[in-house]
Image (cartoon, rainbow, N blue to C red; front, top):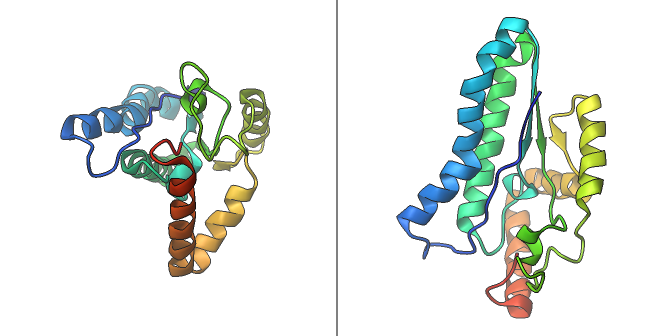
Length: 183
């Protein structure tokens, strides 16, 4: 089993520099690819292996306040899907852990003083660990520490335009309340 948990967020949109985009791409996407290249051959030789990738609900939905995070987390899910499709029948299992807010420094800041809209429904790392253990035991592709993420994702698939309209309303509400510090 290989678990990957690297990830960073960049609270920017089109104002992010090319270097910033490259850095977040390397950590949030390429880390999964580099790890897969390193361990997949041995897994295939054994006919058994498991990738457990920490991604984010942003990979299924989006991320208000961070275009680079939303884009890279979507790409990480896409790569995990490809791994599962390509190697699943050869004994390789893949799970993506997709939480919303988790009570860590990434959410609250180094000093614990950052305010953001995901904090209200945030869960503990211990909760994420418990849900992850259950998901791995059941060999689920999507491991969702926030069960409502599945409902949001299904709504998105049922009526994309309506979902986008709702996300625009949420964006406006979050920006009015939190300004630039939305994560």
